[in-house]
Structures are given as C-alpha cells and as structure tokens.
Length: 303
Image (cartoon, rainbow, N blue to C red):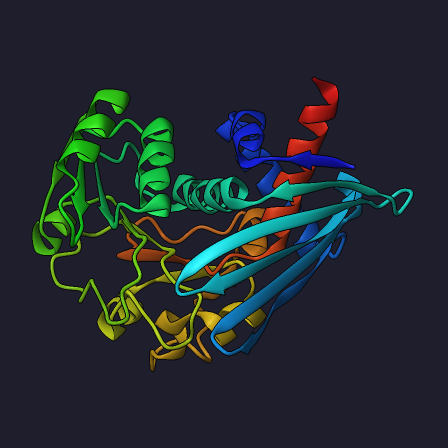
C-alpha cells in the first residue's frame, strides 16, 4: 500500500493555483449533488478526542475519510483514500500538509471572489501553521503593498523571513492598527473571544475567519457579523453546529445572507459594488481534504 508522507505531499501539492481549481470544481460538484460529504463526527474519552470526516467524489475518482486525534491541543491527521471505480484502497496519506494547504487555498479562492480589485493591505491575526500559510498563499495570489501581522508572541525572525521570501513589506502590528485600511483580513488563532469588534473596518473588506471549528469560541464580534453583507460557509449544516462565530451571534441563524461556497461558485453570486463586508467563515470540511488527497495521489502516480 502507498503511504504518502507530509514531506512528499508538500511537493505533490506545490501548485496552489491547481489546488484552488480542483477545490472550486469539487464545491460546484457538491452543490450540484454530484458529490457527497459527511460532517465531522467527534468522540472523546479521558481527554482523548477522535474526529472523522468523509467524502465521495466520483467525478474525481476518489472517496475517503480523514481521521485525526486531538490530545492536549495537538492534532495528528491521516487520510485513507479509495478508488470510486474499483473500491480499492489507493493510499494512506499523512494529512497535516493537506489540512494546511486546503484551508488557505479556500480562503484565497473566496478572496478572489469577494475582495476589492487590487487589494493593497493584508492583515493576519495569528502566525502559527495556518496563519503563516495564509500569508504565503495570499501574497502569491495578490500584489500587496503591506502585510501586517498581529500575534500574542513575538515572531520577529519569522516575520523577517516572510518579508525576504515574499519580497513585500511584512510588519508586526496591533489589532487596532492592522485593520485600518485592510482590504483582506485573516483570523487564524485559537482565540475564544472576539479579536475584531467592527470599528475601523473600511468598506469593501473581505474577512476569512479560519481559527476555530468549536461552537464555544469565536474570533468575530456580533457587530462584525451584523455588518456583513454576505457570510459564506463551506457547509451550512456543519457550520451551524461548529462555528462559534455564527452560533454565538444573534444575527445569523435565519439570515438570508448566509450562503455556501458551492452556491457562490456555481451561481456566480457576488455582493453589490457598494458592499461593506463579506465574511468567509471556515470550519474545514471533508470535501477539501479528499479532493487534495486525490490530487496528491494522482501526482505521485504520474511522477
């Protein structure tokens, strides 16, 4: 049986544009009921959590399940991939790289749909695995003049390396200063209470909130949620069970402004030109993991 490691997968999924293309295709297939996915299932005993997500993508030729443990806040991911033609097991894949890649790729995909033309300033809250990957993928997709990073811990050397790598200005900032004139904002933290209160946001702002899939934590305040013209999620069913930003808000549950990625891409939905704010709230769904696992496998076989 083929086992693909995270190191191999990092190279097999190096083409971020192709990753985004396949993710968009998969979401459209889901919207058109040509694909299916199972929402995250969690079990826990004595502080050990086990989570499972699954998806079937016949047009991509793959089905699979992602399984991972959470122990003392640390995650260990694995994906088992099947052929939808024969039912055979194709591969077992480490999934840390896939999780990192697919999360940022979906944020960029939605930013390409909703951010203003020629965004100049990116603000990123958090510089862990997800925050760093978002900085890199966003900077590759857009020509920013400045990227401002908001973190609780000093990351001076990491910020300097990102500046050298991306060849654009990357600086440490405060939450209040970072959102001023920011065209795109990413929140990728483990915050349990809101980081952004709504004051200082400019018109035509896009926010990707990706930090949590727990119903008890949030990164965005009620005022930010209320201000949004459109809120985009991967799955209404899963997001309204997991996304604390939405569950804890009094402005979402019956909202007509709540749409899925599949609806947006299949129906080419866009806000009016005078929109204030579009929010993409991600929790991570199986479709994303399995379609990129399939791509990694196909690239491995091809090479």
